[in-house]
Image 1 (cartoon, helix red, strand yellow):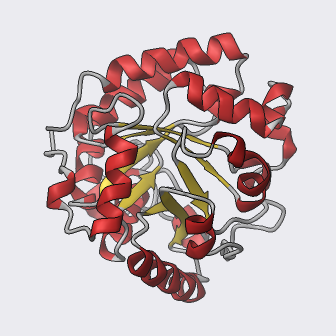
Image 2: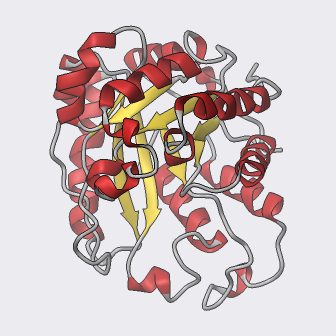
Amino acid sequence: MHPRPGLGALGLGTGKKARLHRILREHGLRNGTALFLPYDQGLEHGPRDFFANPDAADPRYIVRLALEGGFNGIAIQIGLAEKFYWDYAGELPLVLKLNGKTDIPSDAEALSPVHASVEDAVRLGADAVGYTLYVGSPAQEADFAQYRKVRADAERLGMPLIVWAYPRGQAIVAKGGADSFYAVDYAARTAAELGADVVKVNYPHPEKTEGVPLAYARQFSVQEAMDAVVHSAGRTLLLVSGGGKASDEAMLDKARTAMEAGATGLIFGRNVWQRDRTESLRFVSSLRDILAKYPTE
C-alpha cells in the first residue's frame, strides 16, 4: 500500500490546511478518510439520471441524504449551492464545482467551461472547490489556461482544490479508453503535476490494453493498477469515483481496492442516490465500514 499522506506532509498554506482538516477530521468518520457525495450530474448528464429515483431530482433530498449518511462533503454547482445549501450551511462541507458542461456536444474536443469563481466559494462558505480537467483533450491549451487562474485564486484565498481528472478525446479513445489503467494513471499524475490538492479519478481497468503504450500492455491485476495510480498522485490526496450504478458487490470491491492502495477516500454519487433513501443509507453504511478500517494517522 502506498502510504496515505497526512495533512502535515502536503505543503499546504494555513487556509487550505484548516479547511481540509474540517473536511477530514470534523465530518464523516473523522479519521482522515473521506466520503463525498457528488451531485453535478444534472448538468453533466441531464435529468435522465434522476429517473431511477425521482426524489433525487430535489437538491434538498440530496443534502439531507448526505447529512444522514455521514458524508464528508457534497459537491454541487453554483446554482444549487445558492438556492439550497444555505439551509445546511456549516453542517456539511460544501465543494463548489467551478466548471461543467452538458453532454450534448461530442467529447472529441472536450472542454469544461468555468462558470463560478473561488470568490463565490468563499462567499458561500465552501471548504473546497472542484475543477474538471479533461486530460488528453485537444482543447487542453484552453483547459490549462482557465485552470491556471483557478489554481492561483485557490492558493491566494486558501481554498483546497479538488481536480476531477478525466481523460477525454479521440487520442484517449484510441489508447485504451478513458478508464484504462494508462489513461487513469496519466490523469492522476497530470493533476498532481498541475498543483491539485486532491484528485478524483475513475477506477482503472488494466484489461483495456488496445492501443496503450507498451508499458501498460502487459497483464496487471486491478490492485496493482490502483496501487500505481495512488503512487502517481504522490502527495496529492486521491479520491476514487464510483462511476455508473452497479451491483453492491462490485462497488464495495472498488472501495476496498482503492483504500488498500492508499486512497484518501471515495466519491460515490449515482451509486448512492439512484436508490431509495433506505437502500442508499444501508449502502453508505457499508462504505463507511470499509473506510473505518483505513484511518490516516
